[in-house]
Amino acid sequence: MLSTESKKHIDREVAKYPADQKQSAVMSALRIAQEEHGWLSTEVMNAVAEYLEMPAIAVYEVATFYEMYNLKPMGRHKLTVCTNLPCALSGATEFCQRLKDKLGIGFGEVTADGEFGLKEGQCFGACGDAPVLLVNNHKMHSFMDEEKLDALLQELKS
Ligand code: FES
Image (cartoon, rainbow, N blue to C red):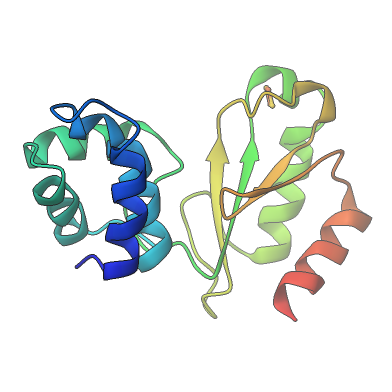
């Protein structure tokens, strides 16, 4: 379930901890596994558990706690918008509604063509930049408005 390349990346993370603390790299290992597969199926989480020599339940606990992990396929581009109070007070709620209307999906859903998935996010630590949107957990877009949203969706589609 884990490619040689992914295992190499995980090994690099494991090396940051004492030899008997391999499980400390579980968050990184899940990120790497998700990058390989797009989401974390039970089989993938089990493979991470086996590789890190830790109980599978402990891996599930981490994967289900943090929302950056996808427990189901979330499309080619996962869009996560922070909806916490500071962002909500700065227009995130209205922005989310526009985004949902444009994509025709709600939180936790994926467009029929598989291009976009939408997720509700917790604070990204960029509260002053609201509304903020994260693409595939990696690229943050700040001060989102209708114009920026249209340009971003167009760019991601092409
Ligand atoms: S509350 Fe939204 S980024 Fe902090």
